[in-house]
Length: 449
Image (cartoon, rainbow, N blue to C red; front, side, top):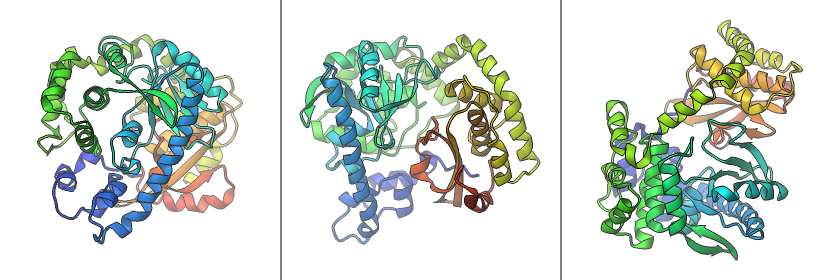
């Protein structure tokens, strides 16, 4: 199965799409989920608007549905005196874009004060929200918890203690957390009290620091638009932002980012930074945003005994799947065989996930090898007595038909595949009866990972 190309694959085309005045490339618009943005910014008579109308209206409807669910949860929190802080995509869509649907986002990010996190989770469960996992269950995650809304899981809400990715809760994340809360402002959405980041902090911490630290110097297609609308809506001047960057000890981080994405100068260049240059940038920003790699590796070292136990438990099953795929077993037969119960209960799904992923790594499976990963996860989670489904979907990409496989636990995609149902049209789901097996065989005709 083919892996979809990264958004940074075509920097020149992306630059022309967002900065040039010519007609947009419809294929690129769809790839970067910019349909609603261009529908509302193209001239009324532009012929492309007709093909963008349906996804634009769909984006508006989706945002309103997400907003209603999130406000319901925050209203429950407000009754207990909790004031969360929305930030990143969802918050920017609501506060700085002319129309919320113009800003595509997948997850909803909420910041909660560290001492309020346990109470917030308790109230969320009482309001019908389901915790996909908590940090204690999946220690390599930087979120405090990931929640699904009670309406069937429309909203995937990431609850954070820190506004940048933090794995050990040391150094820069803790410093930036204190600064962001101290400078935050009170606001209301439909009568629900909440906190919002100071505009300069939304740019410097919510956007810049997260890209440099959390995403490894990776730029996403909406970043330039986010920065531009923040600057326009709040009248941010370069001198004011640099002054705040100095207060937050993010001066070098900001200057490096502005080399590639500058809303004042209209600059947008290729990201992500890779190789020796990425290492140099990490050294330059080490004292400002810390080292994500160092924190993750330290956490892995501390967790090594538990990880080893998980790998040893899952390795036989992974070897079985790996061998069957190498022998050329049909996917229909393979999935049917994997559905046999193993009667191995009492293991948390997060530990199963960790054991399978590390076992695959030991066998040399690439990180993007979705078929062996999904088949092995389905077998292991089914054996642990959990309600799981193996799903396959397809979509049209730059290189023709692309396919992808993923696993859903109680109807929700596992971490790492959260956007799969949005990006791929479902062709097969198991268990769902034998009728669907021929569809899977047809999708499987695409080259596998």
